Length: 381
Image 1 (cartoon, rainbow, N blue to C red):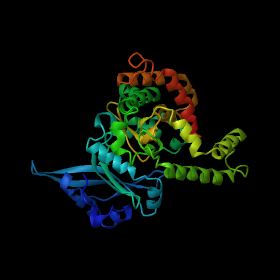
Image 2 (cartoon, helix red, strand yellow):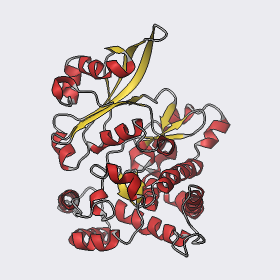
Image 3 (cartoon, rainbow, N blue to C red):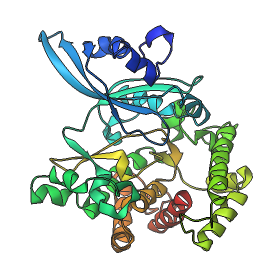
Image 4 (cartoon, helix red, strand yellow):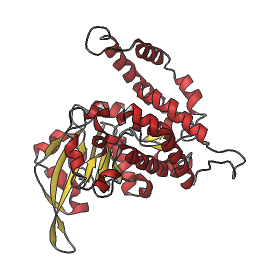
């Protein structure tokens, strides 16, 4: 898995495209038998600035002595996004995929595409991840939530839904059904790593938030990263705040006041007083439907985009999932039941939710619901 990338460093997107994929073929030849790379197709990237490239690899099957064509998606840092990748440690995504491919993180609970290659350079902020291309068999799950999300306003939603050919398969990806499936899948991962410092300690140097929790880092060396993230949020709000009342978006004065108060109250000491008393687990960190792919045959989900993977609140991830894409009326009608389903799935995954085995030290439904309500709002605002 840890093959040396060309020229001893991690190539950026511009370098991959400049040599028509020769560098990509070189790093994948040993694992996949790749000997040629088709033309790159540029996909729409995310907020991190990393490029998404789609291509086909021609590979030799040494056992059967045949040629195999593998469709892959390459996520690679651009030259201009390397600094941001270094500042916010977005290279951690490659570390996550590398750990998953090596099974040092439990692949049974991660539910991700096949990982062909993953490498990063924390010193430069660069990363290169090569995954199986799911677009032939899956649909981006966020498209199945309709126009409730601004992310879907310019998308052809009918085309996405049309890929689910039967009424039975369409029922599998009805928003409430899809969300329940997402919550249950999340519970499997959350329960597996719930407050499990022993299982996660070897990954603590790259997991986001591990340096904020004394169980994983007694020295709390993640303070600098946390403060960099808060500066980014503060600077972003300052830019938006300057335009409030000048036309364009009409801001509710209560939201403006809430944001002002939130930014003004940023404090590492206050944050520590809160996080050290809350239960934590391994979380996706940017858990919303557009970061999942739904199978057109079964509706089952696979997860993508682990740039913010780390230590955090499981229910907070769930709240982001519904706030991001589900319209408010639908959410209010189903969220209690879905959080109950998640809580039950935590118990099925081995988490003590009743206190029967540990003298009362359990994670109750009331705690779960409270974190879902407050944590999701805090993250979204």
